[in-house]
Image (cartoon, rainbow, N blue to C red; front, side):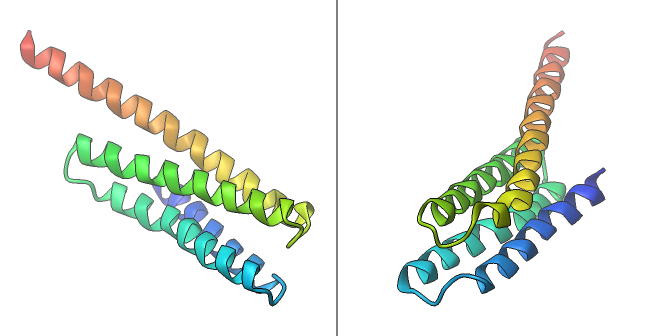
Length: 125
């Protein structure tokens, strides 16, 4: 499962790079392009970092960054659409993938916290 998520998180960044290359040559598009490339590629980079976490707390913190970057990517996609720099049908797949990653990450954070709580309860027993 981990390898599949790594693949999907990288794919989001690659799809955003292709999307950015389709943007009009305008100053507003340049600014948004830089932001969305940073946030979208950060999703995969931070997920990979989470896979190498040194502790449960480190894992959770890194996954929270993945969640934040995915949400930021969603924001920039909305801005691109609402400013009419790109048509919404062009962003549908990326938004769907990003939503799926957010759902997976949120569930993973919840599970990791529950596991961490169980460990601390067991240590006290």
